[in-house]
Length: 419
Ligand code: EPZ
Image (cartoon, rainbow, N blue to C red):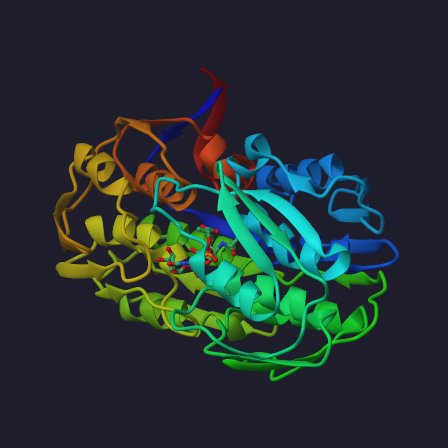
């Protein structure tokens, strides 16, 4: 196992290129199951979640080749094993995204229930209910989902609760269903639009992309294509917060400011000077201490839950009081006790954290627990006085490609060392 050792207090300065989106790469890799010929996916990030996805696809009979640092050739055209095993699914909940494509292409699937994780129980009821409406027969027993269908039939599906991957599962299932499927109250995250654009390039007929009402006209088959994944907006925002918390000045390139308005508004509110162009964002704190900001997480295009932990870290050293409310997951506060151990003044009340900004944090020995909580601890360590050690960095490697290399490029004093 590895840990990160950070000597804090250095303002980050410089330019870095962000990677492709994890949460767009995953559904698109699973969409390869729908295609009759191989796909080539460019701008894919080198992350452990991507390797897990490729291992899962291989276990089902897919073949893939890493053609370059970020280009993947994936042939899932003839699966030989329609089971997604527990030991792979338990490490990555997004594995549930095999269900829709397998049902649509093969009419059957056996998928381990993903189970919960550090941030919540993470049920999949919305996925299963919607697939049943499309004509799937679903049974859950012994920790597995047994699904089969004589052929999916397009229908109207309204999600009572917005769910990103449930929306993605149904979109993929509907592409090969018979007739028209209308999804209302669909999630509108940019990664869903990226998936839809890729599916349409494969021959799907999806309209309403980017809105909460999607119409998908089923087609006979889909073909493999070349596609380039959209930039990772959460990685981009995390590095902007790294600049803000260290009072530095950083430019993030190969990103898309058009899908980050809610986060950029908050960065302007903390007192950062923000400049954007088509595919880059520059944040300059001009050496100033950030001002505290209130945060309420919600679904896109509102403030993303995946940036809550990072902004909580920022608020711990900001000027003034702030209230952070987590409205999406029931337990996305695993970073709070660790930040308190660094001297943060945080009080947790239900799904809300009350924060009183302190002048500075002090380095400490910390434990990472989940992907974004770990990012929050790295940000706190970059700003803290003294040394911060963060154990179990495998959580970080799920969603941040070579985080210590990118931070070193910006002047951070950070090392990855073996435990
Ligand atoms: C996706 O998870 C993302 N993962 C998450 O990113 C992100 O935090 C989340 O959307 C919210 O934006 C991927 O895209 C791979 P949801 P997902 O279904 O789809 C409840 C990261 O850090 N719910 O939109 O699993 C659920 O418990 C990860 O990159 C049900 O009750 O999230 C949650 O409270 C973490 N039943 C809420 O809905 C269901 O069947 C939203 O979850 C499904 C979800």
